Image (cartoon, rainbow, N blue to C red):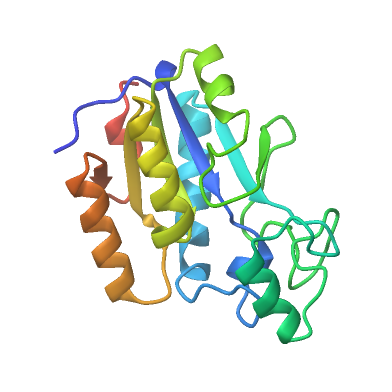
Length: 201
């Protein structure tokens, strides 16, 4: 049972919900991602209702792949895939949010160069300067970007709550194993339909 969370000190992080990861057939498609779209959209609406900041964490690469992880660049280029997640990209392999997931104009976007939302980004400063000590994690993929962000959040002394229905992996087995590992290291796992019962509103 997760104790109530103070919305004045909590932020919702939506991680890597971009067409290149979410859309079936996309270059970096995660099989479980599309079905989380309505649940993440609902969590974002409830977060806004409760006064939580909603922060969008995105992966963006230079069109030539020069700032991409070497293994990913090698794999994509071997398939003839260029410009994946490029700035201002549109369509299947783009940085656009998938249909059904709407970012409000005033919501902050943070670009991360690697898996964790905290790695070489301003996220820690943004959270601390706003008095945030708790993060709710949603997005894809659970074994990579959610997990790395979770571990860094805990290392930086944030309270970390993983919204399991709002996270995705390629298989149920991968999802289960990684959720269990995060729980073992101190993350709180929320499995409910609505985040409002968590919040003191």
